[in-house]
Image 1: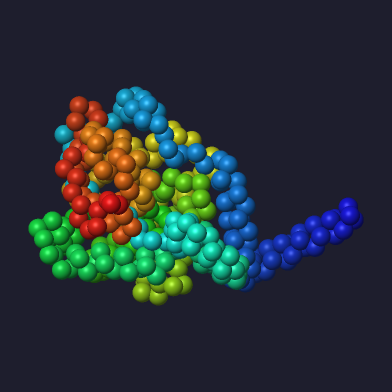
Image 2: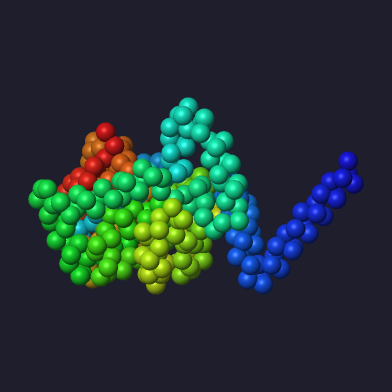
Length: 327
């Protein structure tokens, strides 16, 4: 038995060694295979070391009380939170028994992608419904059917409006589908601060290094050109393996500093449900508001004002723009 295991380990290490040499030689599928092995190992470790989600009210309030805001007193910015459309991971994980039944088929599909730079689960891409939800944002903005959408359209046309996204592909792609006409004339910045707070493998960034570019999903040919011109100047890389509650809160407060210190008056942020809900729980004082308990729906857009008052970040005037919060 021991001899058999030794032989198997030797064979595995030989395969890895040959693949590594092929990767150095520029063989793309070898590089993709090694990246997938890395993501698998990272994902397993991340399940045990990621603990940034779910800080208690007491922990949030304590951190908020001790935090010293650097942004100037009286600063006020208009912010739009855009939650990504449904991802392939959401399609499986959030459908109960239907997702359980579909899981083996998706695992086979994922296995067949071992030599591809794309993935269904790691840094999960949009599902077909998620793509439609991103496109719906664009349709509603272009239609301008109410005063809130008219104002949003005008702000998006303004050259001084800033568009930023989480480093995870489902958020990037939703921003690309939702605001494609406006991205012809302005950049989409990637921000590490917006990465989701989760231990699931869908929250692991494929663009892990500083200023690195994530691969565009193969299922989104319309977004290939936009992925190639993503602005990486502000991108500090993916979150580290060891994540605590305080590190998660640090990213939320860091995002608030970024928003208030920018010259732009309007910032549109592509991101994630847990991150956004935690942001509202910290900075919006009325705990009875749906933002404290409900997630922004997939493909939803919510507007608010973020201000600095008496040395603290404060959210005011929350409005649902597209879809809004889960009902």
